[in-house]
Every structure is written in C-alpha cells, then in structure tokens.
Length: 284
Figure 1 (cartoon, rainbow, N blue to C red):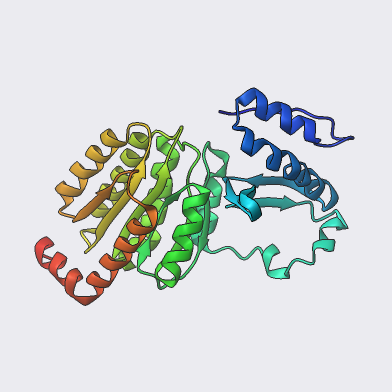
Figure 2: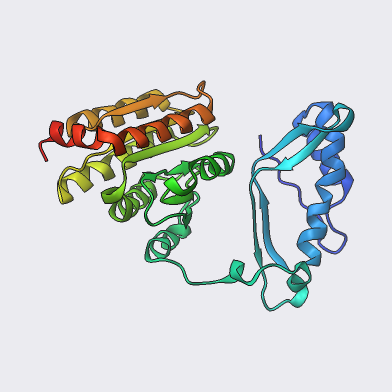
C-alpha cells in the first residue's frame, strides 16, 4: 500500500501526518507509535542539512529494549544541494562527493531517465561474481556477504520496463561477464515488479552476448519471487538450456543468505575445476 502525504514545507512533517497516514493504511498498532516518533525526524534531517532528496527503502522494525519496536533504515539515499553550505555541518568525507565514475557507471547512469532504479557501484574490477540485484534490502545483504568476490553493487528494482532492463543487462554483461564465474540474479519477493519482463530482458541480453562474443564458461544462480516469477523463470530456463549454461533457481521461500552462500560456493567450485568442466561441455 502507498500513501502520499502532502504537508506544508513551512511547518514541516509533523507527528499527526504520520499517525493519520498509518491509521488510514490500517498499520498494526505496535508499529504506529515508533514510526510517529521517528519519521518526522527525517524532515529535520532533510530541511536542516541542505538536502534535495531523501529516501529510506526499506524500513524494518527491530525489537529493542523491553521488546519495543524501533525502525531501522536498511537502505538510505539522499542528494545534497552543494550550493547550500548547510550540508557541511554533517562533516561528511570528501570522497562521497567525488564525480570520477567508471565508464560502466556512466553508461548505466544514462538510463536513470527511465522508470525503475539503476543504482550501481563498482566493488572490485577483478571480481568473479556479477550480481544484478533488485531492492535496497537485498542490495545491502548481497554487497556485504559477497564482499570482494563481487564485481558490482547494484539495485535495479522499481519495476523496470523491458527496454531499460535489457539495456542494463547488455551494458553489465559487456563489462563483467568475460571475467565472471557466476551470474547471480538476486532479489526478494517483489510486490509490483513484473518478474517475467525482468527475466525476459536479461535472458535476451544474455543470448545476445553469446551470439556476439561467443560462449563463455558461466554458472547462473537466480533467487527471486513476485508477480509472474514462474513464467519468468521458465523463459530464462529455456534460454540457459539453449546456450548450454548450468544454472540453479531459488524461489522466494529460500532464505536469501543461503542463496548468497550457494553462489559463493559455486564461485569456489568454478575456481577449482568447474570452469574447465563447463568449457569442455561447451567445447571452447
């Protein structure tokens, strides 16, 4: 459920705005009080430190002292008006404002005019797991657990249309598949993302990569849930079978941490002979 809450910028976001919105949404009583106490503080942060945008997605509720729930921001994004000196009061490190993006990041950033997210950051240009990730919570866990094995950290959630996801796939595959052991497509259970369109776009991008550059030894691991997930997995499976690429799919009922650990285990297997086995199968 989505609730848009208009308020006067001169007076700011108040507790009653949050309370009324949560009650109209039918939120559980235990969630209302801690959110009413904490969400208005976001306006103070936004208004007092020269921000242009502030986003928390998702927010999870964690039991604190005495069992009282406390909101935890699993993913935080903001943008500053650098002409407003108020942001300097946060004493943020200078490298956060660096603009020296890699060629890969620049190409992906050009797609931000489309629906859906396209947030990327190069983790390790020598990494061997390329993980297109969907959702802020998934991104946080994947980035932490993959560590230096990951080529990129990404969030492509927000129901990207076919054209955008296909462009993202082609750019990502061009830069990272030649060195990757594992293509790891991972996200939680989506609410509004059409998984079929996402997987169709990525599958078509992978097929085009093989047609253009020839086969490479690769293992595909997928963990996803949401609308049209079975149809999407069937489409992706057919493409992987036609290309001779081994794969393993996990549904939304699989713990994400275990799926990530599986991808890491496959990466180690690839380093220790698995890659040669796939090369032999593909006759390359």
